[in-house]
Image (tube, rainbow, N blue to C red; front, side):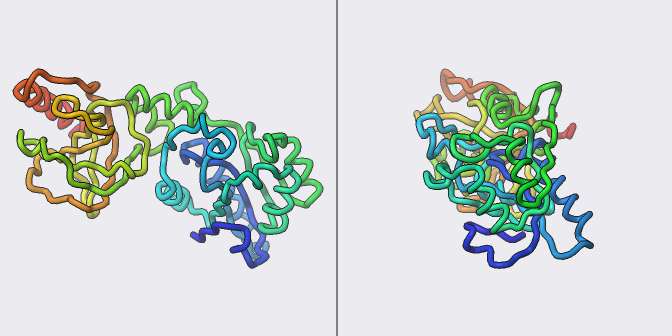
Length: 313
């Protein structure tokens, strides 16, 4: 997959099948748009050189337009590119979202990005797609501009999960209440946190449950504080694990993080490795315990539940 970071990097005149959006989760709704572009490009490939392209942005528009309302992203830039690549896309164009870009009219955006840079033949968007200054352009305007500039616009219906429209907000709400099962269903894959293992206070090791502390610069939105059944993937090996999200309130208040105990592997050395944590099921909310013995007893109960859940998968 080719990754363009600006319009200036596109020097050829290959026709493009395009979808445009923030794509801040690559959930099932996003996947539907991207897969349609890939499918349409493959069906038309015999008609000459072309490629499927995802146009997205280097940050959420709120970072520029509404910085006081900016939320943490569901996935990081690395996770985003990997998820797009897995869908078979030929190229991604990541535009820097600046005040200048936000000020462009819809027609300016279409002419510069879709027509002049990408030579778009077919553009796929969702029904709520907006573009141009203050989001003035909608799907009807895009269709009008497509007729003017010679590209077809296809508007796909949104995707639902258990009767609810899939959206980044709906997934974030699910994660905020610890409902990783619903979040996974909307993502169409298991939600993950990806980051380097760093040295922590080593409290878990002193009570017989060593944990891998994941860097706070890790990618992947942290769900509600609590304990989760999941998997830790390191060096291509998938280990059963208990993930704990929170602040270690029993021993010492520390900044919010996720730490993971690999079940049955007390001597595993993961320091400085980049690992992936998969969230499978919610076990319980975080709690402050009255001493080590009470905490250890609860951990044993957690691990029994987690083992049963993972063995059933």
